[in-house]
Length: 294
Ligand SMILES: [Zn+2]
Image 1 (tube, rainbow, N blue to C red):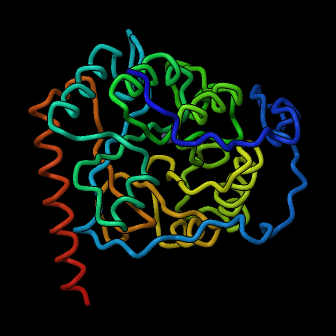
Image 2 (cartoon, helix red, strand yellow; image 1 turned 180 degrees about the vertical axis):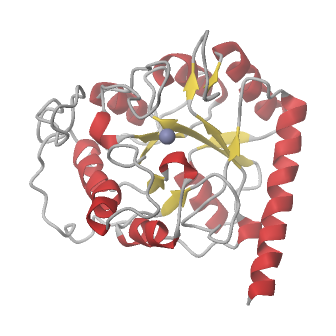
């Protein structure tokens, strides 16, 4: 079965995606200088949905790369065979994988009971091979968080095996197949404690460039390394995003720091079930801690 694309209205970018990168000296293809105005045209902005209490945070899974591997020091890779079994398990449980934007909209409308968020950080090129056909097999979707200043490049922020990142054309293909495209910052910098100007580039500027590439507003931001503080969450909110994706539960858990469950090669159905239960428990606990603090 082939899933119907959820979005068909993407406009072509106004410039080719291989213009000069703002990252001088980078091997990455970069994005066009869009010359965008500082403010969005009327009607083009997203509206953030309602606040989300920790106990309400929906269950979402965090993947990175889905590929065969011999070396994976950061444990960011799941083999295609394991990934296919994990999706089959979700399907057998009556769950449907969707992107975080769709998940939050469904939750706000009270119809997210059988949904689980599927997210892929860093925008590895293997998404188009090991992931997309499996998503389509089950009628699932997902969110891919791409490092906007490094499209077509590599994961140069990590020591260790180099993995190619999605090109703009591959991003268009995913987007046309209904995959939500979100920002993972401009250069995959950790945001807590960085200068305001750099924070604005990683959050607001990356959103502008991605919006220009896709021809539509960008709702999702994902914090590199899952690292978020109050200033970073405020920058994401004020840049016009609809939500921010973090990893761990904590004092900021909510719409601007959504927790996600790490999924690795060892995760079978039993372990995923345990991670789902742990997600719920942590949401309750963080919510109670927050109540106590007030
Ligand atoms: Zn990342």
